Length: 338
Length: 297
Image (cartoon, rainbow over all chains, first blue to last red; front, side, top):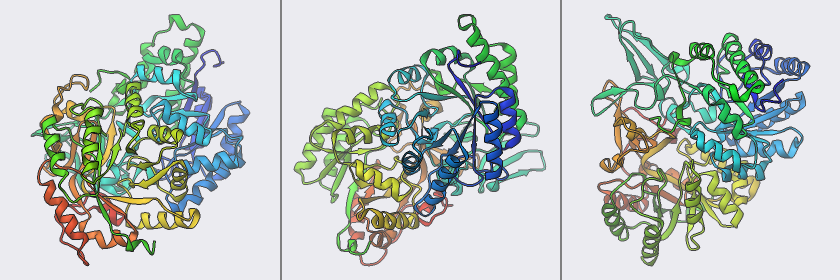
């Protein structure tokens, strides 16, 4: 169904119902994580234990879909064995690939399980052909997910020069910083995306409401944002707060918005991008169903008639409804973005 | 790490993180030639649009500092996006005379291909002994851990490396300066002035120590430095020198700042000859104790 499009649709699943929803809605592959700190969405109540993952892989394989297991946080010396054991379990369960960032984790997978493909995670921060060549030569990666810092022109060039096929983020919450190199959350809370698989974790969030209806959102005591009565408020991720510079308060780092590259689909396909990734393992089955189904329709219609393709307004409405702050952006793909 | 305490700790002047006019840079490094630092890192690590010094200027300065008895290392960019930036990186690495600090996997790859030893900079993610060992195989001789590392995580990592590999790279710890926390495709300085990155007008030149960002309650939080975000507090590990010595640190890195850098260097030099702990001048580095990097003022 999707071979003609050339691009695989890779969808998130934080639990078994989301995995099933992704498959029903037309995902070519689903990415998941174990229920511990070995992956970048180590949120309470999320992810898979061994039993659930076995079932998920069986469900996916019965429909000829793939399951990628993210082991994409960075283990410290004392905990490395847990990550390596995670790689071994993924291989034993028949995962179609692991998604890793740490050199030691990828190296272990390459040596012990050479037949299981290794994908370089977005957390691996590889943005050039040379960086990709490093991971290719060192750990034999079969694919890399690009950090969300490149313009569409740069993605096109990289597709032409990369030693490995590339996957890019198509839709979802937007990390404004180079993934794998953001310490904003750990600077405020000590909980780190790299080490702990969390960003601005809920355990540090405190909401307060003042008598006039003003609401404040704090992260470990630091004011991230303040909202007037009735003003829509978003989750206080460090990079999405309002701060002051020279007395002006604004979203100095990033607005609460989601990445949406739907209109770039033909360019990404022609550039040779092999897979489009939907962000959001922390989101529920309804989000997974809606975003997967929309992108499936878009990809199928592109495959059927690439030259006549244009984004359907209904698709855009549906994606906007699933976005942070109901806003979407082309983000860094678009050179004029600032 | 026993035994390494006998080796005296040396001082390094880290790469200039901010963007200064050419004359200010010339004056700064002319002064630096007289400061008691052992190693000087030169080069642009943040933004490829910052070209007050070209490679030939950096190399001329490197020669001059070498004549003054300093070891010079050429630092490289932390975030590369355009092919032209990789081309510039290649020219730095192929300079033929000076070792480089690799701040991205691109630089690691180019050094490794050429069999050149390198310094592993703080933006390479190294959190465990096995990764460190793989990088040592690649030619990493000295390592500057990322900002999240604290005393305990480093001690565990180095002990595990020594046990497995038999040796460890020279350890250089960031001991003074604002901690680099994040990099982006977006230029935050340009955004603060509501202009695009391509039309930034080199606003960073107006902010020799970065552009301060505060919460809406007026609490200083970050400093914007082009595409880089730094912690607001100037991290100071001088009081922790006894711990750094016990850990086996070979070098302490001091990041340049616009004012008073000579006094900072002399203070660290004096602190290194003190048997005990010296008083704190800058901010507590919370990461060092395994907590949040930021500590309440």
